Length: 116
Image (cartoon, rainbow, N blue to C red):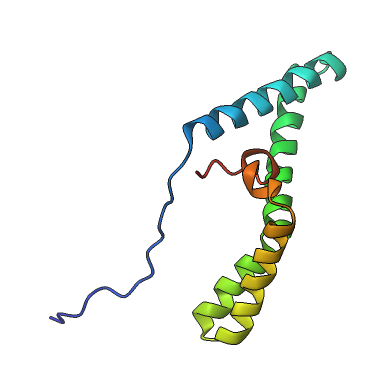
């Protein structure tokens, strides 16, 4: 038997803010409530819920794909050993969040991220 340590990549989980999770639940609930007022429920009473959940998932995915693209690209380059281009990507991410600090301050809404 080999005594080498398992070299598979481990995913780390950051800390989550309970208040951010609660705020996200409030936002989704409010969205669904408004949709129940404006979307006819004659054919399907669950249609506003499905639209609200779909909008939440689309917003989450698009925000992650667009706003966090430089950071994700930097991580991929870092893992590939391309350090200079990775630094450029991380600097681009830093410039974005330095220019618009509210993106990070209100990440529970802008990125739909409950991370602390």
